Length: 405
Ligand SMILES: [Zn+2]
Image (cartoon, rainbow, N blue to C red; front, side, top):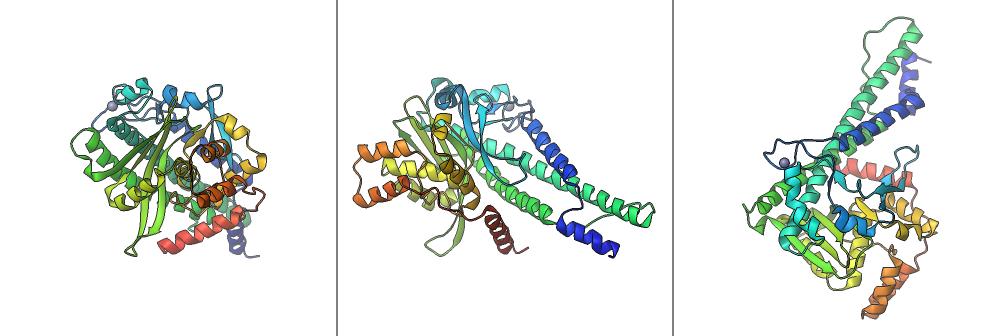
């Protein structure tokens, strides 16, 4: 076999870099990322040169996270980076670490202290601050992810060049100065998709961050953003803070990507939902808000939908998850990869069975809707979902079709 054909084949078959080296690259990249998340950065507040504290909470620790924890721990969905196969797991996390990021310096942490101490959000001013804080987390974490992907591509390419050179040297028994492989294998292609998605996300977050900052500094009226707050009088066993994306075709046949920032913040005997977004999405976001607040069951549906179709940045009370059947747990974790729905669409199964049952008993509801809700409770989690690899290949192809690359 011609040496170059052999090398090319190794590239295509992904056997050029030894599995152990690949594992080490992955391990280093993961560790560097976690070190970086845990180390102080420049304070997020504009024109502040101070160093941030290591752990700014996105979701209030003692007022919210503690209340839904068991033994001061919560569970959160997480990509299992130690596994060779692609899978999500529910990981345990202490309330001291949950939802933290290197965000603000000591002084600017204080801007959130009022509702942190009061242990409730009871004014629109505080809701604005909470929405602002969640955007700050998105920015810091996405930037760190982007760095991680860039470094990973760089190191992977270097390693690949080195291995290619070593094989060549071995074959021809001569030293070679430098080898540069230009081929984008599937690892690099996937990393580039991640890079491009993160860049897009950061564009939106930076824009909306600026608008919220003007509002909380009272330099602007609320006209540039959409904000709605709803308070429900029960403690939900989940805390969530993140951004959801929905591709829609609107009334005027325009294809649009709608973005919503959602916070679900549980307190002692209530839960506050803060909906926020850019003014350009006002028609869709307010419509959806008006729909959701019509009935407690619709609020429940919306929270479940955002957990599955919006963001994976949420924390659930361990007891609730642990009481679920193992088959249901696996279905939910696989569903993250398989679903193509957005947060504007309901999930067709029930996550919080007890709450759903209680709502069905406590509130009057039209028979037709009741049937749909009961179907969710009776959902058969033994249903097979699309294989993960199929979904990933589809998403990969769709991305290339959409972006024409
Ligand atoms: Zn500061």
